[in-house]
Length: 188
Image (cartoon, rainbow, N blue to C red; front, side, top):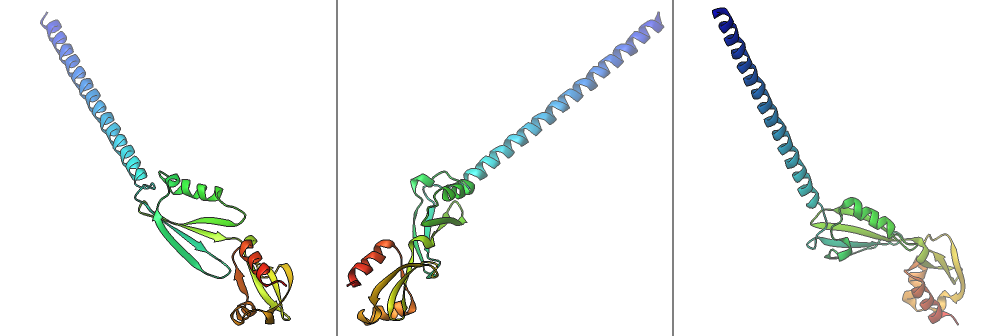
């Protein structure tokens, strides 16, 4: 009988020991899972915070550079970001600028940070013109300086001296309105 009780005791002891090890394993496993879950939540929160820090806010300064690629002139104007740009990240702003392209203007993102955004607006050749002297007569070329837009009968010698010099060097005209104003003023 002693052997049976001894065997039952050892079996009970091994069972208690096994349950203890198993419980310890499960508790350790749960702690590890909790730690991984907490790390994942912290990482997600950090990513969201970093993402939020890379958005345009009401405090973001916005510089619009107007670049004329033919004359090389660059005008800058800095204001606070427009309401329609608030909450955009770099990719969203680049997509917005692509959609905003027109026949006359192209837009590109020069610099992006939550503090300051720089957008370049470039005129295309479609709305720019050059007045050029050819054999004593003013000719109007498109912005590419190669395509004749409109021949005129305006004699260069009949223009004011300062305007004659500008036209001999190639006078840049920014828009059709400015071009037609010139043509109306100096056509006979």
